[in-house]
Image (cartoon, rainbow, N blue to C red; front, side, top):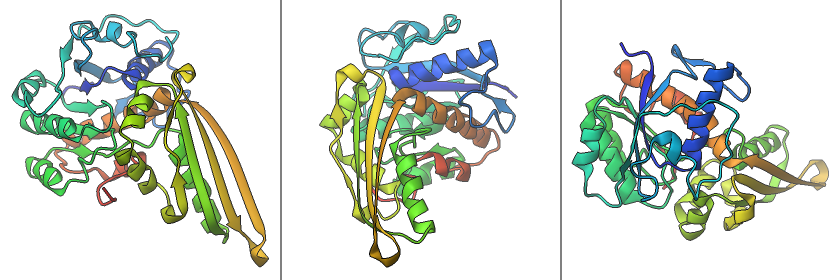
Length: 314
């Protein structure tokens, strides 16, 4: 059995840059800072080998993966680690449903396909899922586009004995995770939620794309919250000067004993791609382990890492 999880990635943006560099940093230093699970079914953080990469940017196509992750518009910073050439040239990705067979052929030898392209392109996401299914590869959908929530797609993966993980990762310590924890704390302590809102500002290309294609992301964010009917999501804001940083503002208005007022305002500032990579490293190992053990469909241990797992609203 191949020990290292052999991974193909769709999207050579900031999230992929954070993942590739973070794995290299871990291998170099052995540091477990920011690592939630040092091992998943015997797979350590460093047990990841990238074997293929797909992108649509002409500037990145043909470049080695470790070179392409630093090309504009990527703005995730360089980490202090040795990053040898991966030997993985970036291949032209899909822009529609044509070319599925070409991608399936390029996945030969891969175990996991990590779909880390921008949200808002459901037909492209489904095309990559189809390519993974034809190639016998586990598929992870990190976007808000409904793939794992699509019963037809899920049934195909289950019938083929292939893992399908999704949809929309819950960042390691992002707005949805913090908001969810605070709302659940209110419930546990017996307070009554009156209203709440969430504002997210960021400077990555993913934020720019989501400003233009916000609908699926808004639904997915609400899926991650209890009492979602009382929560408002402000339109996402793209501010280039924030670069890879995300700034979020949360407000919660509630009532306690005697209907007294409880008001909470929180500001969260994080590196957005880092938060994604901190979850993707676990999803990859969960998917590889499920594939090796012949467990098709959605692994239960992936559910808490996602905003919109199977069964949530589309």
